[in-house]
Length: 108
Image 1 (spheres, rainbow, N blue to C red):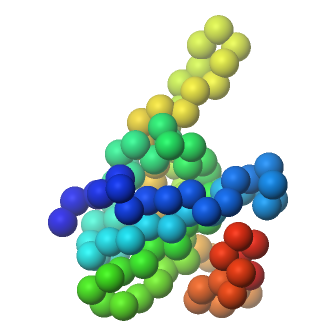
Image 2: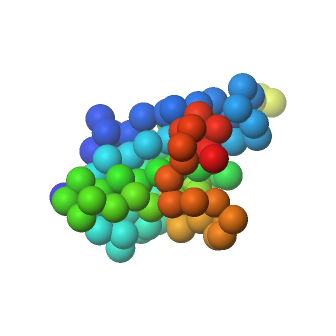
């Protein structure tokens, strides 16, 4: 299956909940697919930024993977930074966190 922008939702915005945004993504794709560079073809356009937390929920395998955005396409011009195009995620390296937050807006 391919990336489905209709199942990517932003749960929290960085300025309110901390220095990062938080996203949920529902899919039946494998990790090899959603960890591919640029998989989230419009992630940057939607506001996904480097450091954002992304919870990937696999509907077929009934798993949840805690990820972090590692790349986001931006352009600059006239003193403005614009988020356009794709984003890439990777598994989160934060071993102190659980597998899924009990309060998703805070990432605990």
